[in-house]
Length: 635
Image (cartoon, helix red, strand yellow):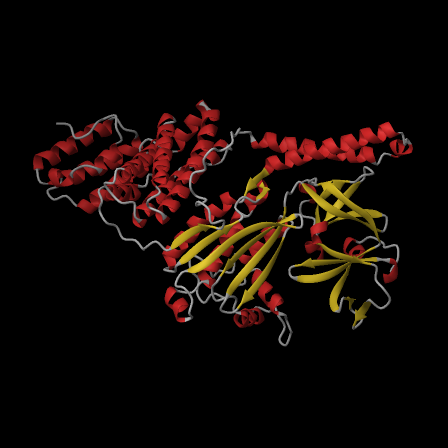
């Protein structure tokens, strides 16, 4: 009888060796040691020494089981093999057929998203059997594709999970919360593999995760129906339209075509160039002198066609927010299970579409804000019941169109912001001067300061003071704004306003000295020709403007940009009222040159760090206009 197959994975065979049978028979121990000694002669140096150690351990009169396990683990590390997986396998497959691997990545990611969505929906509604069948098919497909590409670790994990789901489909076991946890963890492992493959494709290190033996054992216990420790299910996701759950499989989907992102970006860039060319043509003075009706009709037709092409190109970049919302369901679920809190996640406006780049950038801000809602906002069930609230708190994600922008709300019905605690912390950190009077809104916005946290202790969820400042930076980079509303004991509401796309913006063309600049229209509240005594100096230092009964700071953009102004007389200027970070400011410019939809152009790495400039655009007269980052200029 042979205990080992020479061509198979030695570490795997050693791990599954029936020690009880071997240790009870000296002859078996001797035979195992002999086989290992023979195998070590055909192994590389890295494996030979660990095999020799294992052989000597098994040859002893009494075998130290713990030592044996440690030696097996040493062999696994030395061999660098985890069921035939590893960076070498990765590089080999990528070298053979990189396009096949790219297709595998796209399809596997889609299947993993489907798996997570279906399992979370199934946890809420165990009778939704189609979700179970769909998750099973997704794991089956990943297993087949991984096996074809020789990603053996992925194949084995997917196979083990497939067994659990098949037993659940046949009613042998129940897919309870603990088993859902195990399956989701398996999905996380597969996602880590995909991340490593993606990195290797782009020339990175691409080191895949180690084979998850504890996870595989948990999966096998789940398949055997053995109980495992775990918390009860504490989160539910609720679509806001009252119709069938949004996580259920969508029927009758329109045909889709996969297009390389680079090609799509190039198309959008070329459409932008077309828009610029059409605008320059419309403002060409030579054509302006020719007033023939036919020429005017042709120019109008060109403008209509260009606008339709631009609209279609922008629509290609748009994706529904529902995909991002559904990703947060898993986050809320895991945070609740970890903290022992109860929460219901409500989602509204999942079909609202936003630029793909913006949706990708919103993932981090969403994670930080939801963590804060769960950790700081929602109370423990007993505390909520004592306050007359339902034991389960509500967390809401809502999106809608508002004045040419997208508004996104993240709110909860928890304890709200503790303004006294925020103000005390701000005083301690020197963010606020003693005796300084702040409005509730200004106190609330202090949580966006870098390093600011009111947590009493640091946890793996929050407390280190990194989070909300990251949120503000992300939103500002997306040319958006964020507002806070909070009522003590009733909850907090974060409202983000974002542009539909990062490629094109509506801009207000302003003149400062002899130069033209573009102020994004979303940052403009109103424009005023200052009257007598509207702008005045306070204590011979700062200028203020009295606008509709409110005092707001005045910022002269010519001073910020170091450009000579045409006049210093406020009556000869234009005051643009802008709101940044919950505060209003008055921006002084020389003249307004009109409103224009502009295509944003990057200024390249040389000007990337220039504060106050968000990009450039080609104006109607062919000149380049710089797009101002109003928030950065004010700060």
